[in-house]
Length: 319
Ligand code: R5P
Image (cartoon, rainbow, N blue to C red; front, top):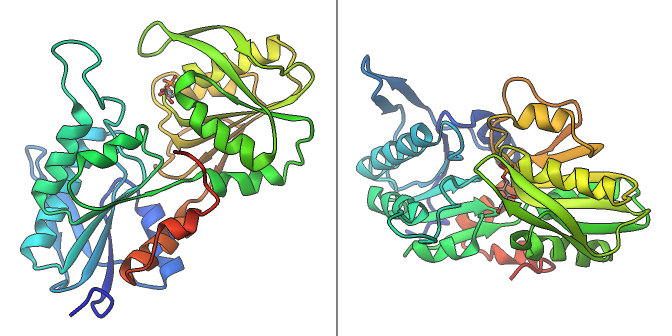
């Protein structure tokens, strides 16, 4: 029996059921039923309520905050599915936590992303479907197929609607240049870079902008907004150097610590993000959220039918 013949099943952990439900409605499949509870001591208790034997199962669980809870929950769900004889298990991890620890950049530190990859494979995951990994080389930490999607095209549809003329695309740091270049190529705009120095986990210093942005509208691109130190400081220096309007476009809205307050008071007029993670609680007024559910639904359909996923991104150029 091929996976094409098997039933497609969609399951959600508790990290982002809203996204899973949206994907289910695009796929026109019902959500499979499972309950995720807690034992009195806080341990996670999972129970699958239907037969998934031989099915092609996709488990949706971004591993953002609470990161450790969401990761363990995903591992236990995968173990449940494996022991219930699922035909194939794909972990759909729209936001992959711990991705920033992808190398030993100093002595006596872990390579956390590799540990997470090992745990996922060890629990029985057959494939991973993810979006905008912080570092693409993390794909190589898995000895199973990883389908990697870009959210840039989804965000770009909204950017087009803003009719931004005289546009420059800017990266807030050197690490984000590849992504900014893809934006610049697609929008036919020149590229600029902010010279960023990180001074702590929550603070950065920016003094210079490389490239001409004076009098221009600037699209500031990044893969994630965590404490929002990077993106708000970059917006400040861009305005200080004469940018007209600053629009932020970032895939993952982690929004931890002072992020909401920083974004609320930031120099950018709009903060465009996707829903790779659940956005709960108070959010800044300038935040606009675009859904990656249609993109994930298309990728899931293609994986299920054994069709090319990279065909979805023939025009993407981030290598
Ligand atoms: C850095 O390499 C990333 O692309 C982001 O710019 C960074 O992780 C964002 O963090 P924060 O929002 O805390 O400055």
